[in-house]
Length: 120
Image (cartoon, rainbow, N blue to C red; front, top):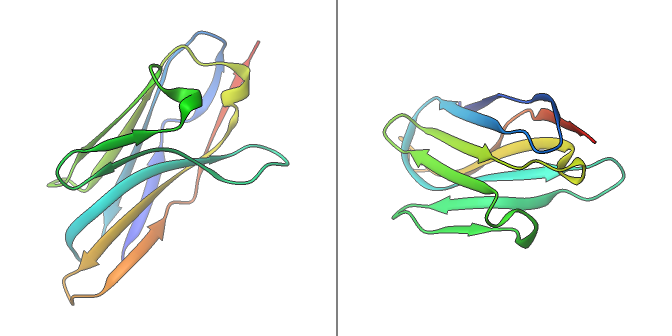
């Protein structure tokens, strides 16, 4: 069974920085992509950033230039460096892995979420 555990959320002020981490445990053979999503109150979950095998990345327009995603496939860990945070970045942040298990099964796994609150 593959499980993701996130950490790093919290309450910060506008303009501050936070670093989120997400580590996977379980029998992962290879990772296709690692991503961060967020869901604000009353809104749908949206993609924040994704990093694919090979290192290519994509970001939501709202976070370009402020957030940086990085990953360590060997350690099955993904990070999201968030700078110049704004109140509108307030949300529960979820990580997601798309991976292949040791048994050859493709799966997509979500973390439990970590709350980021940015006060003005």
